[in-house]
Every structure is written in structure tokens, then in C-alpha cells.
Length: 250
Image (tube, rainbow, N blue to C red):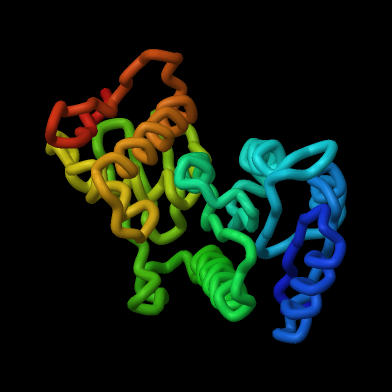
């Protein structure tokens, strides 16, 4: 079995595409390249990858559309997705983060910074795979991989494997959505500050405005995946001036 991490790189600027691909290959990565989102999807259907790096402004299928296609496919939803784009306005960056992408990098990028981000994502993928392969007997787990079940009513989370069940049906969430919901579930019936929730989901400092934008996007997605209709609060309530609260669903 080939353990060489694979990266899908999608950008319509051929010179930049080749330059980044060369830098990644020099670090031991297997690099698959595509010049638009549609070609990227075709590669994904044939080849498993560990990380996706994509531009936004591209023909046929842009980066946002590619991201949505990937996140709606259960086979691909856990793949770390990085936007690498010249769109540097604060509104663009907030929008990219609000979609749930794992990172948003702005061109021109320092290659050392890009390689560091990719290394971190590949390491995280490796760790998650180790979690999925550990023995079923709890006593056989390494200490750092001890599984834990967190439950609030009909909602149950396996924090080790990042699995979610709602009324005994498995729900597929992104890593950010899971971290957000885990924080709420651990503090069920308590108001959790919005900035605390976003720090847990994104691992970054944030101001109140940015946190509010990111939280609303994540909550809409989580509610939809739990089966609530548009406009329904479901089990996640907004506590004015205090944050959000999970009411254990019956």
C-alpha cells in the first residue's frame, strides 16, 4: 500500500499550478492537478486524495461550487479543503470561512506557509485514520485516543471518531460542525458564548462580529443535517446577548 499523501491542486493559472505542484512534490507529496472545478471532480471520482487546495475564480465550476459538490458527497466530506485565492477582501475571507472550508489562504502565498498548512492537514487526516483503525476494546486504545460518548437526549456524539447520531440515525458533519456541536452538547441547557463556540470550531481568535457570521452559517448547516426545516430552531436556541444553547432533544 502506498502511504504517500496525495494532494489535489485546482487552479486555472497553469504557471502557478505547476510551481505549487513542484514545491509539494519536493516534500514527498503525490500531486494531482486540475485547471477547473469540473476537472477536479472528475479526478476525485477516480483517485482518493488527502487534501484539496483550490482557487475560487475558475471556468466551468468555480471554487465555491467545487466546495459545495464535495461537501454534499459523504465519501469526500471529511477531506480537508483549502481555498487559495487572490480574493483578499475581508468579506471574501469571512464568506470562505463561513462556508466551512478548513483554511483560506490569500495569493501571493509564501510557499513555506502553504507547506506548513498542508503538513498540518495531512497530519490531521493521518490521526483520524488511526482513530478509525484502533481496536474495539476500550482498554486497548492508546491514552490519547480513548473514545468518549457525549449525549444530550436523542443526540449522541462519539468524540474519538467524530461520529454523530440523532434519534439513532447517523448524521454526517464536517469537522468544524462537529466541534461546534460537541461544545454545545457538553454544555447542554447552558448558554455558550458565540466566540467560545467559534474558537472551538476554527481554532482561531475572533471578534464578536466575525464569530456571529461564522456561527450562523454553522448552525444553519447543523440544523439542516439534523432534519429541521428552514426557519426551525430545533434543539439549538439563540440566547440573546449570551450565545447559543442546546436543549436536549426528546
